[in-house]
Structure formats: C-alpha cells, structure tokens
Length: 212
Image 1 (cartoon, rainbow, N blue to C red):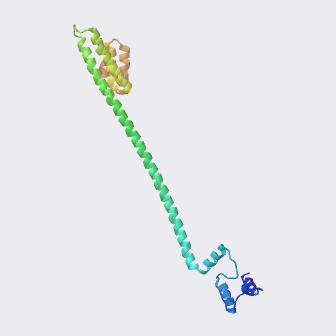
Image 2: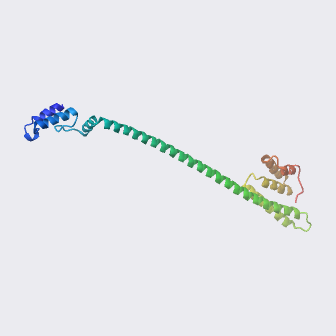
Image 3: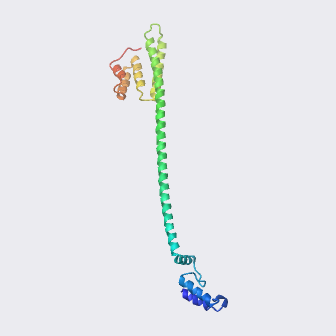
C-alpha cells in the first residue's frame, strides 16, 4: 500500500503535487525502507506512534519498563496508603474506646465518691440519733429527724450507686431500729450476696437489735 502511495505521488498530474526531483523520490524510498513516515501518506496519530516505536525500539523498551515500574510504584503506594488509612482508623477507634472506658470509669468513680460521702453523712446522723435515743432529756422529734436524715442520705447514696454495700448495711440498721425487721433482713441478705465476707452484715443478720 505504501509503495502504491509513492508511485501515485510521483505520477500526479499537478507538478506541484509530484516529487520535485529524483533525489526527493529516493529519500522517500529510503524513509519507507527505514520505517520512517512518508510525505506522500497521511498517517493517523496511532500510525505515527507505531512508526516512532518501530524506529526507536530501545527507547520504547526503556519507556515500557519505566511505565511498568511506575505502575508498580503507584500500586504499592495505593496499598501502603490504604493500609495506613485502615491502621489510622483502627487507632482512632481504639482511642475512642479507651476514652469511653476512661469516661465510664471516671463517672463511676464520681458516683462512688458521692455515695461514700452521703453514707458517711448518714452514719453520723444515725449515730447521733442512736446516742440521743438513750438520753432521757432528748426529744423524740429531734431523734426522729436525725433518723430521717440518715435514711434520706443513705437512700440517696443507694440511688446513685445501687450496689453500695455501706448504704445497704446502714439502711438495714435504720430499718431494724424502726422495727422493720423484714426490710432489714432483705437489705443484709443483699449485702451478703454482694460481699459474702461482710462481717457487719453477718453480725446484724443474727437477730434484731433495740429499736430507737
């Protein structure tokens, strides 16, 4: 086909469209033999690229190798970036879990401290009520107000921390002092369930004491 193009170019009727000399025709034939582009032929971009590759095989091989290496580098970079992204997400999730656990522990500590404070206040009030109950001059209303204060603080502590052994034990003692023996036994049974070795609950569990 390309030979036909050469012949056709040399036989065109219009002189300006033919080869201007035998030397020019010779150059075209040499270009054909060497695989270079011919002036007589209109090539597509793909055909021009194919001819360039055919003439520069060494450069083309290097270029192809460079392309393969570049593709490998890009693929490796993508894998590495994806792995680092997943590792970063895992670290973030672990940090969020650790933060949530820390916040839960802190909240539990705050609840526990508040319950301990209320139980300590309730124990003071109950101890005063118990002491004044032995005094012949103590007014029953005053003693009762101390006992009510002790109960209120202990129940508030239990509302904050439902398994607070100190609050349960004290409420059992308050119930016992008011003659509510069944309630007291239920509370001490709960204490022994939570803390089987609790000496106070075991001692109180033996029998009712003196009501206030």
